[in-house]
Image 1 (cartoon, rainbow, N blue to C red):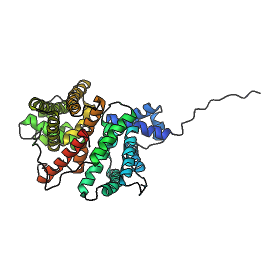
Image 2 (image 1 turned 135 degrees about the horizontal axis):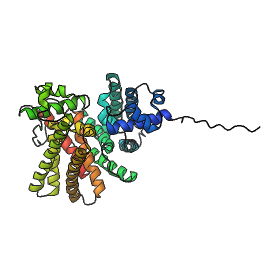
Image 3 (image 1 turned 180 degrees about the horizontal axis):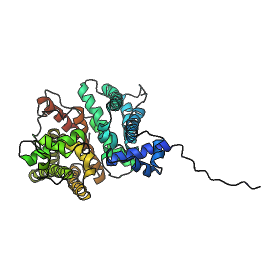
Length: 405
């Protein structure tokens, strides 16, 4: 008697990993609050109940995804250097390991860079421990390579190496793996060969004002309160009622100035982009030499970022809440700014391709955010002498990435 064939559909052995990867990419692209378990289940091709067999909740998925990304950094930096090869060889191995991890996670790496603030306290502490361990592993050969460098310099350099590698998760420029690795490796070594200023010997930078202030009328007060709340709690977690309270208004009064919360966000981000474009225009009008002009732009960019630390986190993490037209407008303004920086950089370094120059500009701009977090540039008064010195260090490292060793 012939056997009756029965086809049994088996779950892939790596189903749980598939779910985690899909969740990481979704959270990174759309943000924690915009993603649902149903979205992730559909992406993987399972039902929501089937997904819950692997993960207890959306937060459980999020926590696993964030900590798995940072654990990859822990794993690849766990190397045993050859003492005979010297600290340079160990650093080169670490640099390539960081770039490899970033390349493997370009679609999801923004998750721990921009969405990690939604972790609960214990999980945030676990993430911090992982990143501290990675930085310590970078700083050990750094201490051997530069034994006289103060601790702050080694901390900045390790954070800068992570930033240059991880920054490729913030944009979608395309190039071959070998070309990206070559550009980022050269930029990383340019950082390591750079002498940072000292607290008793540094040049003061440009002065930048706050883009949003609470004391310039009700319209500005709403924008200021909104940006502070979006930065502190996230767009999705901020209500119009909270904005009204922070601005000293009744809820109904908000709608005299803005139709809704999305309009506040789009107005604020356009204002920020327009400010940077205006400063670029002034520099281009007055410039006499490309290196001088780009150096001046770096100075302005650092000063503006330190004076308005809320801008970067909101720009990178909250754009998804804008309308498609507003997102396109914002991208076009940013692309125009990047194009101008790239043009200046290629005038200084004609050996660079347009793509390589674009990678370097993005890497340099990303340094401001990552090093700013290291030195807590969101403290109440960024104009203190100590902060001026930290800005000088950031400017120096940005210029090293752009101009090379």
